[in-house]
Image (cartoon, rainbow, N blue to C red):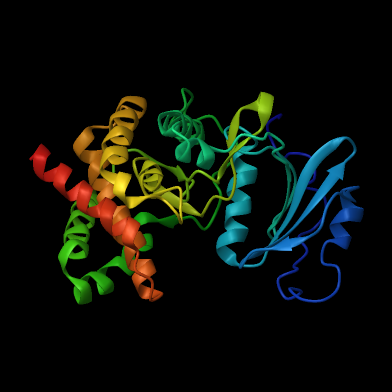
Length: 303
């Protein structure tokens, strides 16, 4: 895609935040971007989505309803299809038209059927492509557009860990201490995906494996590899966690070039934060706590 705004940036932003129920919230964009519905609409907690076609191109029309999702749409647009699903049109109010993944392969199925090593390498490669927008060979990385606005620094993102760690103690207290150590000394600052897992990197066939659904984060690149270790969710077999943890760690360290102790520290900090969110919602967070314990043991071994 040429430098500057991609196709579909025409017109003033239109806010659809309040129109979450009733009526056809997709209709204005079907007309504006010459789209035809190609399936039934569906909803997540923060977005409304509709499979569509634009000419011969299969696409997904996404209307983000929450600020975090709206900012994520801006990140997708900034990536311009390099490492992420190609964006065909974008409205700054948080409306995104992106190409639809039509490949049949699934990284979650890979992980559950004896191909976890392949899945881990693919995920690491997908993350590296996204980070190349900031760490590429030219000054300012690969993207020639200004970085998206309203990105959240990791030290803000991690604020939810401390209150839960204080009340729970134990491994979460250890995770908090690790987070306190690494957050002030971040090294490679990039626009982060923020939610890399096996269902957010999809099979785009000839285009390869591309990411969807980023958060609005900026910070240390090692953070984006940590969530790989806690997925696929929710039915990951914790009994296999020690074997998978060490297998994934070997692959991630080799693929990323990150110093092993630095990478494990981010895995531990992230697992603690994720577990804290689950506990805050009155859920056990068992997988995340198990990963935090494994990371703590590995850090102790490396000391």
